[in-house]
Image (cartoon, rainbow, N blue to C red; front, side, top):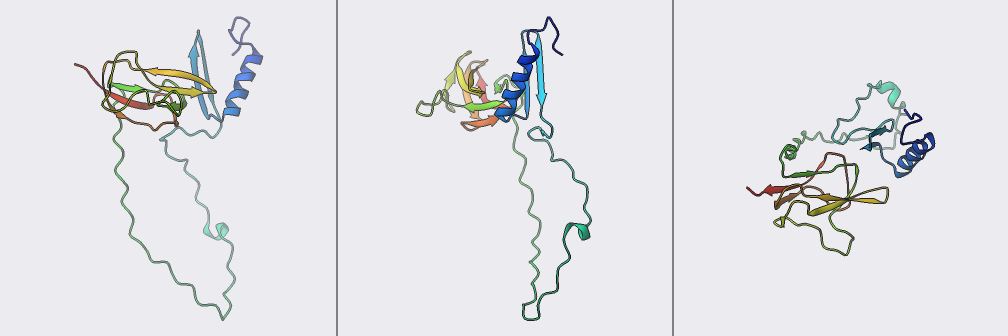
Length: 178
């Protein structure tokens, strides 16, 4: 709620809502300066969440009655029944409690380099120090540097360049010096 002593006016909130809608985000969470703002669009489904369950539909209603085939047309053949394919094993997810996991502080686009012509900030096997920039996240044309919180060697980069990431998503893993 925006009150008289709030850092935001009603017009500010309307402008933020419009910017988020224009950017196409389904979820935004901002905290700062004593303010917490959470916006979720109707129909937003968190990444990795199961799809919504749909109510069953009566087959007679779902497909229109088919007219009989003309006598000259060949009879339709049944498709061969294939055995079910086993599901691939689930990907190994990084332990977010691991101090070497660098995760996204916000929803946005992750970039490994300052621009397309520049080399990436870090590569697998490269040594990093505390505070070293390991990537950028862009949100509404604003870039935030993502920094290493531990010293060590980059063990794995978990997202591709220019990939949409969610808040808390693991970006890379650093083997911590020890």
